[in-house]
Image (cartoon, rainbow over the protein chains, first blue to last red):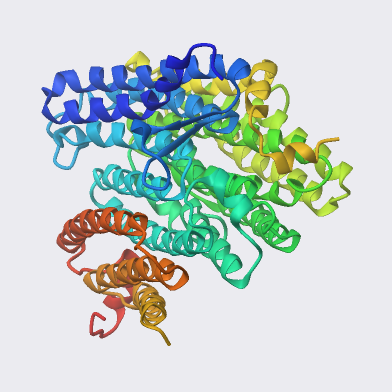
Length: 496
Length: 111
């Protein structure tokens, strides 16, 4: 039990505070909206940090909202996995909020420009609240509702850009709705089989049967479609590349993680016994194909934002590459590795998209061919791309290195050579496409260029995220300690 | 076949018909309708499946889930229709970008 029982109530903070700020932002004058957003997101960050500080002593926290019992009540779970992701989310959204305020601020009343639309800030806060709600969700149906909120708010943010973003957003919306329906169909079968929606109660009540296997397959397929795992990634690059800079950052760094974390949680907490080695290997194989395909496509892209979006396809593959390792010896290290990789990618990818947004905004052209001279015009931004790239490649001393190292050592210890080979090959591909960008950016420009003057929040918030990605590679004990709290028994028992 | 299992069977069938429509149809309104068909099938199954298993008083939880699901589906449909109108205004045709460029190359019946 918690030393202080009132701390448990703080679990609703990361969901309720951004939601409240979103509701107020609809009515508030335009000038006040960014401040409301900052208050909501920082409040979420503080409450999550408070919970995380209590977690080592108190253990995983199960909270029933309003005291309603199962199955009608909503169960929230604060454990190492959920709080790691909530802290990552709120930290990234906080940095992206200061970026977005500067990004949207001087916009004149250009048609189609999002600052002309009053809806950016409420949608932005809805996405933040929905992300936190998915991570904290402890029951299957609550997860469905929060995923729908996340999908609708994300598509709304994409569509704000207008033009080609409308078609990309429409495709994303249809994909996310079909994925949700497959997930809900699986939930219906699981409820019929177990009479429960709570994750902890499902595992003991679920026996292996064709119906259970079908339910697991439907739930997983729906979530994979929303996570954009190869070959279900077709919708991601146009949607993420056509959104506004701060929106792309949050979509690529965090929104795909929501469904990934839910998949991870379900496979290891709700149906650990049904997750057959063959099915794990299938997910791992799709992950391997995603790493290679996404990396090769990223190499071929002409536009910087499209390159970064295909890099997300590849990095999502890395996360699924861990699934075969999350079973048997070394599973505890694989669990740490995959969660670390998820947060490393979140920081690096958000920094990259914010930096790409700066380049697009200053030069009006984000093709790789137009990059020469960028290092002189935007030194901080190009440095940010370099730092984030190093973390994405998995070189020390970054957080990306810690995640990949844990997975690589587990793969070698378990003698899963193909996984180790893909981990290394994927790192080389990442290096190839990141160096392609950096090499161009460091070339001198054809014409004389001078250093650009930017609102400081643009460059520095991207830099802060890249720096956080590096710092998490140096200070690893606190995050690793947090990740271990409440790791699923199937994983923890397999630890040596 | 008992009544609840007939409902469950029809629910699964509606889900599959909707899935086919969402993939195969090109007109955005048809795609949106197809997703709604998937939702109806899922809701039918949610109510019918627990009823096949247990006798006695009906379980309130699936009803609560379906009511919530209907609210979500209505909101999502309203948003999808609004977005489809914007897509048509932008592209001249209520089709997804890839389908629109195919359609421009040859005769089509907009299905």
